[in-house]
Image (cartoon, rainbow, N blue to C red):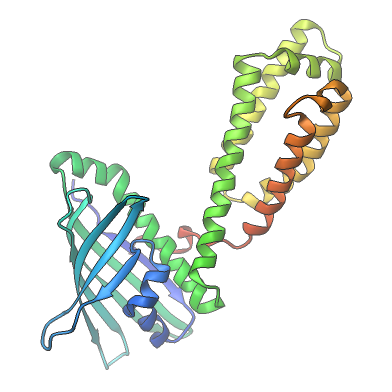
Length: 300
Protein backbone atom coordinates (compact mmCIF):
# COMPACT_ATOMS: atom_id res chain seq x y z
CA UNK A 1 0.00 0.00 0.00
CA UNK A 2 1.35 3.42 -1.00
CA UNK A 3 2.14 5.62 1.96
CA UNK A 4 0.39 8.95 2.31
CA UNK A 5 2.51 12.11 2.61
CA UNK A 6 1.90 14.32 5.62
CA UNK A 7 -0.29 17.29 4.77
CA UNK A 8 -1.33 20.13 7.09
CA UNK A 9 -3.18 23.32 6.21
CA UNK A 10 -4.39 26.23 8.34
CA UNK A 11 -5.78 29.73 7.61
CA UNK A 12 -3.96 32.50 9.48
CA UNK A 13 -5.46 35.96 9.69
CA UNK A 14 -2.31 38.06 9.36
CA UNK A 15 0.06 39.47 6.76
CA UNK A 16 2.04 37.07 4.61
CA UNK A 17 5.31 38.68 5.70
CA UNK A 18 4.61 37.76 9.32
CA UNK A 19 4.14 34.07 8.45
CA UNK A 20 7.14 34.11 6.15
CA UNK A 21 9.38 35.52 8.87
CA UNK A 22 8.04 33.13 11.53
CA UNK A 23 8.77 30.11 9.35
CA UNK A 24 11.95 31.25 7.57
CA UNK A 25 13.87 32.88 10.42
CA UNK A 26 15.47 30.11 12.56
CA UNK A 27 15.17 32.00 15.85
CA UNK A 28 11.39 32.31 15.27
CA UNK A 29 10.80 28.94 13.62
CA UNK A 30 12.27 26.89 16.44
CA UNK A 31 9.92 28.56 18.95
CA UNK A 32 6.69 27.13 17.52
CA UNK A 33 7.63 23.97 15.62
CA UNK A 34 7.61 20.86 17.84
CA UNK A 35 9.71 18.97 15.32
CA UNK A 36 12.81 21.04 16.11
CA UNK A 37 14.61 22.03 19.29
CA UNK A 38 17.07 24.26 17.44
CA UNK A 39 17.74 25.37 13.86
CA UNK A 40 21.02 26.94 12.77
CA UNK A 41 21.59 28.40 9.31
CA UNK A 42 25.02 27.83 7.80
CA UNK A 43 26.79 30.58 5.80
CA UNK A 44 24.90 31.11 2.54
CA UNK A 45 26.73 30.29 -0.71
CA UNK A 46 25.57 32.24 -3.77
CA UNK A 47 23.64 30.12 -6.26
CA UNK A 48 23.08 27.28 -3.79
CA UNK A 49 20.21 26.45 -1.41
CA UNK A 50 20.32 27.74 2.15
CA UNK A 51 21.84 24.97 4.25
CA UNK A 52 21.10 24.44 7.94
CA UNK A 53 21.51 21.96 10.77
CA UNK A 54 18.82 21.08 13.29
CA UNK A 55 18.44 19.19 16.54
CA UNK A 56 15.49 17.49 18.25
CA UNK A 57 15.83 16.56 21.92
CA UNK A 58 14.05 13.25 22.43
CA UNK A 59 14.99 12.81 26.08
CA UNK A 60 17.36 14.04 28.78
CA UNK A 61 20.36 12.33 27.17
CA UNK A 62 19.22 11.73 23.59
CA UNK A 63 19.34 14.30 20.79
CA UNK A 64 18.78 13.68 17.09
CA UNK A 65 20.82 15.92 14.79
CA UNK A 66 20.21 16.43 11.09
CA UNK A 67 20.87 18.56 8.04
CA UNK A 68 18.66 20.42 5.62
CA UNK A 69 18.46 22.61 2.54
CA UNK A 70 15.83 25.26 1.93
CA UNK A 71 14.92 27.28 -1.16
CA UNK A 72 12.29 30.03 -1.03
CA UNK A 73 10.49 31.52 -4.03
CA UNK A 74 8.03 34.33 -4.69
CA UNK A 75 5.37 34.29 -7.42
CA UNK A 76 4.63 37.89 -8.33
CA UNK A 77 1.43 37.13 -10.26
CA UNK A 78 -0.79 36.35 -7.26
CA UNK A 79 1.54 36.95 -4.31
CA UNK A 80 1.87 33.25 -3.47
CA UNK A 81 5.14 32.14 -1.94
CA UNK A 82 6.63 28.70 -1.49
CA UNK A 83 9.63 27.10 0.13
CA UNK A 84 11.02 23.69 -0.77
CA UNK A 85 12.88 21.59 1.75
CA UNK A 86 15.31 18.68 1.61
CA UNK A 87 16.24 17.18 4.98
CA UNK A 88 17.73 14.12 6.61
CA UNK A 89 19.98 12.70 9.30
CA UNK A 90 22.82 10.22 9.48
CA UNK A 91 21.96 9.09 13.01
CA UNK A 92 20.74 5.50 13.08
CA UNK A 93 18.42 6.16 16.04
CA UNK A 94 16.19 8.44 13.95
CA UNK A 95 13.10 6.86 12.34
CA UNK A 96 13.58 9.31 9.44
CA UNK A 97 16.49 8.81 7.05
CA UNK A 98 15.82 11.44 4.37
CA UNK A 99 12.85 13.41 3.10
CA UNK A 100 11.53 16.26 0.98
CA UNK A 101 8.65 18.66 1.26
CA UNK A 102 7.46 22.20 0.84
CA UNK A 103 5.66 25.08 2.49
CA UNK A 104 3.19 27.22 0.62
CA UNK A 105 1.80 30.65 1.50
CA UNK A 106 -1.37 31.53 -0.43
CA UNK A 107 -2.88 35.01 0.09
CA UNK A 108 -6.62 35.01 0.89
CA UNK A 109 -9.14 37.81 1.32
CA UNK A 110 -8.80 37.83 5.10
CA UNK A 111 -5.30 36.42 5.58
CA UNK A 112 -3.09 33.62 4.32
CA UNK A 113 -3.57 29.90 3.77
CA UNK A 114 -0.40 28.31 5.14
CA UNK A 115 0.20 24.67 4.24
CA UNK A 116 2.85 22.02 4.12
CA UNK A 117 3.30 18.61 2.54
CA UNK A 118 6.27 16.33 3.06
CA UNK A 119 7.32 12.71 2.92
CA UNK A 120 10.39 10.77 3.96
CA UNK A 121 12.19 7.44 3.83
CA UNK A 122 12.65 5.51 7.04
CA UNK A 123 15.41 3.53 8.72
CA UNK A 124 15.29 -0.11 9.95
CA UNK A 125 13.84 -1.72 6.81
CA UNK A 126 10.44 -3.41 7.06
CA UNK A 127 10.30 -3.00 10.82
CA UNK A 128 10.89 0.73 10.39
CA UNK A 129 8.14 0.97 7.77
CA UNK A 130 5.69 -0.83 10.06
CA UNK A 131 6.59 1.40 13.02
CA UNK A 132 6.27 4.49 10.84
CA UNK A 133 2.83 3.52 9.55
CA UNK A 134 1.40 2.52 12.93
CA UNK A 135 2.99 5.07 15.25
CA UNK A 136 5.56 7.56 14.04
CA UNK A 137 3.81 9.00 10.97
CA UNK A 138 0.54 9.67 12.86
CA UNK A 139 2.59 11.20 15.71
CA UNK A 140 4.69 13.52 13.57
CA UNK A 141 1.61 14.49 11.54
CA UNK A 142 -0.19 15.37 14.78
CA UNK A 143 2.86 17.31 15.98
CA UNK A 144 2.99 19.27 12.73
CA UNK A 145 -0.70 20.17 12.98
CA UNK A 146 -0.38 21.18 16.63
CA UNK A 147 2.62 23.35 15.74
CA UNK A 148 0.65 25.06 12.96
CA UNK A 149 -2.15 25.90 15.39
CA UNK A 150 0.39 27.30 17.87
CA UNK A 151 1.82 29.47 15.08
CA UNK A 152 -1.68 30.64 14.14
CA UNK A 153 -2.48 31.65 17.72
CA UNK A 154 0.89 33.35 18.10
CA UNK A 155 0.41 35.54 15.03
CA UNK A 156 -3.32 36.21 15.53
CA UNK A 157 -3.56 36.57 19.31
CA UNK A 158 0.00 37.39 20.34
CA UNK A 159 0.45 34.55 22.86
CA UNK A 160 4.02 33.22 22.77
CA UNK A 161 4.48 29.56 21.71
CA UNK A 162 6.25 28.70 24.98
CA UNK A 163 3.21 29.81 26.99
CA UNK A 164 0.86 27.86 24.72
CA UNK A 165 2.88 24.66 25.05
CA UNK A 166 3.06 25.03 28.83
CA UNK A 167 -0.75 25.22 28.98
CA UNK A 168 -1.15 22.37 26.52
CA UNK A 169 1.17 19.90 28.24
CA UNK A 170 0.02 20.95 31.73
CA UNK A 171 -3.58 20.28 30.73
CA UNK A 172 -2.86 16.83 29.37
CA UNK A 173 -0.53 15.87 32.21
CA UNK A 174 -3.36 16.64 34.65
CA UNK A 175 -5.75 14.79 32.32
CA UNK A 176 -3.62 11.64 32.42
CA UNK A 177 -3.31 11.92 36.19
CA UNK A 178 -7.08 12.08 36.69
CA UNK A 179 -7.61 9.22 34.24
CA UNK A 180 -5.17 7.09 36.24
CA UNK A 181 -6.69 8.04 39.60
CA UNK A 182 -10.29 7.25 38.60
CA UNK A 183 -9.41 4.00 36.81
CA UNK A 184 -7.16 2.85 39.67
CA UNK A 185 -9.67 3.75 42.40
CA UNK A 186 -12.44 1.96 40.55
CA UNK A 187 -10.46 -1.10 39.51
CA UNK A 188 -8.10 -1.94 42.41
CA UNK A 189 -9.83 -1.24 45.76
CA UNK A 190 -13.35 -1.87 44.46
CA UNK A 191 -13.61 -4.31 41.53
CA UNK A 192 -10.47 -6.38 42.18
CA UNK A 193 -9.77 -5.96 45.89
CA UNK A 194 -13.26 -5.29 47.26
CA UNK A 195 -11.51 -3.55 50.16
CA UNK A 196 -13.25 -3.75 53.57
CA UNK A 197 -13.22 0.04 53.99
CA UNK A 198 -14.91 0.46 50.61
CA UNK A 199 -17.57 -2.00 51.70
CA UNK A 200 -17.93 -0.30 55.09
CA UNK A 201 -18.39 3.19 53.63
CA UNK A 202 -20.83 1.95 50.99
CA UNK A 203 -22.82 -0.08 53.52
CA UNK A 204 -23.02 2.84 55.98
CA UNK A 205 -24.05 5.31 53.32
CA UNK A 206 -26.70 3.12 51.65
CA UNK A 207 -27.79 0.72 54.43
CA UNK A 208 -27.53 -2.39 52.27
CA UNK A 209 -27.26 -6.12 52.90
CA UNK A 210 -23.97 -7.95 52.35
CA UNK A 211 -24.94 -8.99 48.82
CA UNK A 212 -26.24 -5.50 48.14
CA UNK A 213 -22.98 -3.96 49.32
CA UNK A 214 -20.98 -6.20 46.96
CA UNK A 215 -23.16 -5.22 44.02
CA UNK A 216 -23.05 -1.52 44.90
CA UNK A 217 -19.26 -1.49 45.26
CA UNK A 218 -18.91 -3.19 41.86
CA UNK A 219 -21.27 -0.68 40.23
CA UNK A 220 -19.39 2.25 41.79
CA UNK A 221 -16.08 0.75 40.67
CA UNK A 222 -17.30 0.35 37.09
CA UNK A 223 -18.63 3.93 37.09
CA UNK A 224 -15.26 5.24 38.26
CA UNK A 225 -13.40 3.27 35.59
CA UNK A 226 -15.74 4.64 32.90
CA UNK A 227 -15.24 8.19 34.19
CA UNK A 228 -11.48 7.65 34.05
CA UNK A 229 -11.82 6.51 30.44
CA UNK A 230 -13.83 9.66 29.71
CA UNK A 231 -10.78 11.70 30.71
CA UNK A 232 -8.86 10.00 27.91
CA UNK A 233 -11.43 10.32 25.12
CA UNK A 234 -13.85 13.15 25.92
CA UNK A 235 -12.63 16.36 24.28
CA UNK A 236 -14.38 18.92 26.49
CA UNK A 237 -11.93 18.66 29.39
CA UNK A 238 -13.19 21.83 31.06
CA UNK A 239 -16.61 20.22 31.57
CA UNK A 240 -14.93 17.30 33.37
CA UNK A 241 -12.98 19.70 35.60
CA UNK A 242 -16.21 21.51 36.51
CA UNK A 243 -17.97 18.21 37.21
CA UNK A 244 -15.17 17.17 39.55
CA UNK A 245 -15.43 20.46 41.45
CA UNK A 246 -19.01 19.42 42.23
CA UNK A 247 -18.36 15.73 42.86
CA UNK A 248 -15.22 15.84 45.05
CA UNK A 249 -16.72 17.95 47.89
CA UNK A 250 -19.80 15.70 47.91
CA UNK A 251 -17.65 12.55 48.02
CA UNK A 252 -15.59 14.00 50.87
CA UNK A 253 -18.65 14.84 52.95
CA UNK A 254 -20.25 11.46 52.23
CA UNK A 255 -17.09 9.55 53.21
CA UNK A 256 -16.69 11.39 56.52
CA UNK A 257 -20.39 11.00 57.40
CA UNK A 258 -20.38 7.29 56.51
CA UNK A 259 -17.20 6.45 58.45
CA UNK A 260 -16.04 9.43 60.59
CA UNK A 261 -12.89 7.58 61.68
CA UNK A 262 -11.48 7.85 58.11
CA UNK A 263 -10.88 11.57 58.69
CA UNK A 264 -7.95 10.78 61.01
CA UNK A 265 -6.40 8.05 58.85
CA UNK A 266 -3.14 8.70 56.96
CA UNK A 267 -3.90 9.81 53.39
CA UNK A 268 -7.54 10.17 54.36
CA UNK A 269 -10.43 11.27 52.10
CA UNK A 270 -10.30 14.85 53.38
CA UNK A 271 -6.68 15.58 52.40
CA UNK A 272 -6.81 13.37 49.29
CA UNK A 273 -9.96 14.96 47.87
CA UNK A 274 -8.80 18.45 48.82
CA UNK A 275 -5.68 17.88 46.70
CA UNK A 276 -7.85 16.75 43.79
CA UNK A 277 -10.09 19.80 44.18
CA UNK A 278 -7.07 22.11 43.94
CA UNK A 279 -5.78 20.20 40.89
CA UNK A 280 -9.21 20.51 39.28
CA UNK A 281 -9.18 24.28 39.82
CA UNK A 282 -5.71 24.54 38.28
CA UNK A 283 -6.79 22.35 35.37
CA UNK A 284 -9.89 24.46 34.80
CA UNK A 285 -7.77 27.61 34.45
CA UNK A 286 -4.92 26.23 32.34
CA UNK A 287 -7.21 24.26 29.98
CA UNK A 288 -8.89 27.37 28.60
CA UNK A 289 -8.38 27.68 24.83
CA UNK A 290 -5.44 25.27 24.53
CA UNK A 291 -3.96 24.74 21.05
CA UNK A 292 -5.22 21.72 19.15
CA UNK A 293 -4.17 19.73 16.10
CA UNK A 294 -7.84 19.30 15.19
CA UNK A 295 -8.08 22.93 14.09
CA UNK A 296 -5.95 22.16 11.03
CA UNK A 297 -6.95 20.49 7.78
CA UNK A 298 -5.07 17.21 7.39
CA UNK A 299 -6.08 16.22 3.84
CA UNK A 300 -6.27 18.07 0.57
